[in-house]
Image (tube, rainbow over all chains, first blue to last red; front, side, top):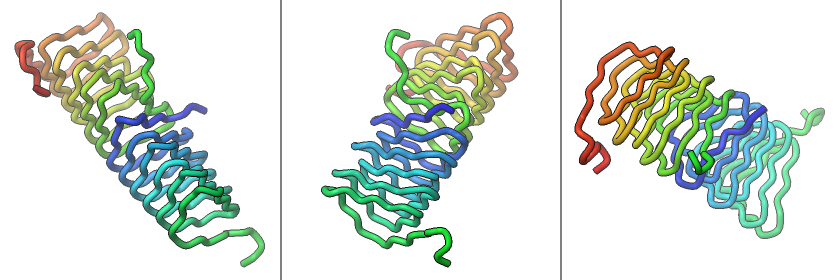
Length: 108
Length: 114
């Protein structure tokens, strides 16, 4: 599987979907829906929603994240929105403002 | 190209909306909407683009339908398929390329980005 790369000067307004991993160093406004992983790198900004299996936030996320497997907020990463995931990792130096809903199988 | 293209819409990815950038962009997946690039756009073999495209240069190896406005050059390579409207000062259409539509060739000085 390959990777889609949104570089630092690239701006995407709209919807990104498909089967590839996604690396965001630029700006995405809208909806991201991929089955695999989304890496929001340092300098990257997503305003909207992300649905993926694994979401890593080192940049700025404004909006809600649904990560089927896990969501991790790295040092320096800013998460402004709600997270819904089975596993949530927040590193020291990360900023998080929002709600967390942990969807652990077997707890419903 | 000497510089490696770092912005990539990979083969399995679909973008619906507007893409804007200053660096070269390689599209191998699907784009529907609008692309505004102050640089080179490469529509690769596996790509399907239905869009209004404004770029400095556009190389088409895959399929494009819509409108292409280039500041410098449009090149439709062998295997490339373009349907729609082209506006560019320089144009290359290779043997085995498919083009269906209209062409406006404008003088090179003062492209659409100036």
